[in-house]
Image 1 (cartoon, rainbow, N blue to C red):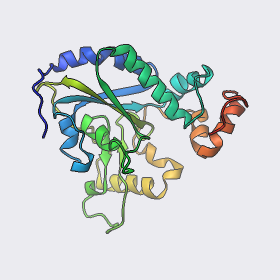
Image 2: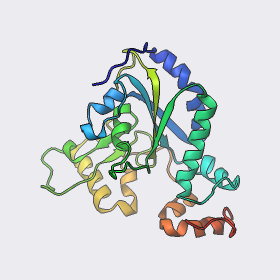
Image 3: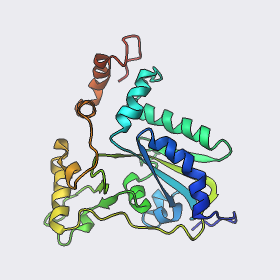
Image 4: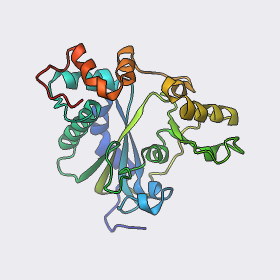
Length: 259
């Protein structure tokens, strides 16, 4: 357990620190949830620990359905897309790095993205665990079902957001290396919106056995979901998305065609 001698800030001061950043990203279709590194490290194996003092401020970044129209399409329109990797990843990296530079010019902020891997091929952070400990979305797992009928079968867990259901994605983890938060920032569990055993079984079976039909995303009533254009994009195999973007007029034939 790592501790720091740095003076901790209050949760009110934390909100002042991240407020402009949060509002900037909200306007572009993202949500931010703060948590302490210690909350995350308490529930993951040593191999996945974040190597910072337990009171260090971290933020988990989610993209909402509106990100596609508010951020991604304008990014393509601006011709900033270099088409050297997945365009969504490129857009989010550009958006986050630009906002961090603008809002935190004097802070040391380490950003890990959901698509990044360590040399060991482990993800840089466990995205769904980060979403759960921050209170953003409940991470439903096999262990949340009493006496499941699946036996020893591997069942992958899935996060459900109280307002967005499954219509969101966990995109990044930001750690403020030199910022510790005081005891007044208390951990609050995420809303448990899939409460019954039967519904949890249904959710995990939809996610594990029928994930392609996206029905797991609608396990709870939602305020937003993907637009028809966004659905078309994500239902298109990754290797064909570049052609779809060119068909929509966002990439020209002179662009690199790695996608």
